[in-house]
Length: 330
Image 1: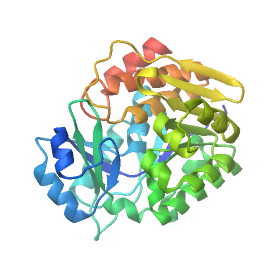
Image 2: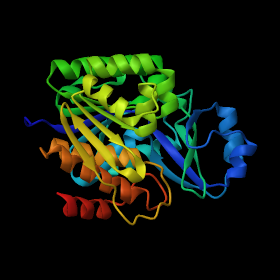
Image 3: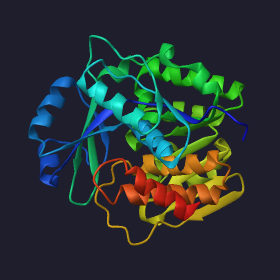
Image 4: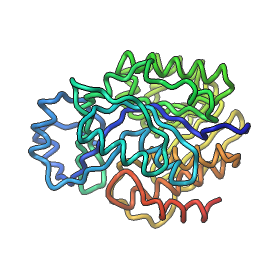
């Protein structure tokens, strides 16, 4: 790839995660859809926070986790996402800059607070997310630094952000500008419920603007409204140049036209918390991709990054661990 300032620039929801362990009975009692991301208002966020057990606060957001992972691997990265000028906003800004990500989106002054996601992790390691979007809803086209977009190898878009009309326009504008500049456009579908809300739009986006699509099995089945993975696989290869599809313990499948790579999952991993697994996979994949590695290696590094993140509590791995993973795969 041509020399550019950034390997990847990501646009996403800038969120601080609050992660706590919970029993299935608590989810049932409060009617929380297990394993999904559900949007909530400020009042509900306060009520749910009050019933959470001891929690761990960590800067998160799907694309934020991915871009932090790429930076930890040694990639040159930038991030576009909206926080408020408050304490959690300062936490998010410090954390993402500390791992080497260029981040200078202007914070929101007054009004809504920084977004937070209340993550309930059940004994089976499934994560159930209740997310108050707060300041992220104010992200708009004016926040997108097009110089970052045009000087990147890949632009990475977070499907969760599609819920916000102005953010949707910002991502569309970024995708078009990226295409005009010869920059690859990548999209993560984020969540099967998100796909169900915007299926037609995601299909159009995939066909017209997306070069690299990330999805787990549930998301890709939802996108093509089928219960057969192979059927979805045949459909997605017609829409995108590259699709990286994760299948939990079955590993992942990477397709590029007639080229198909089946990547086995890392063996012997004790699953502690699945939060951030897909984000970590995308980080490994995109880092390897922007370094010119073949697609099989991209999938392998993605799988190794995901295996590490699910082996501990929280959505991001330590930089030292990430470096070891890269050394073992690349």
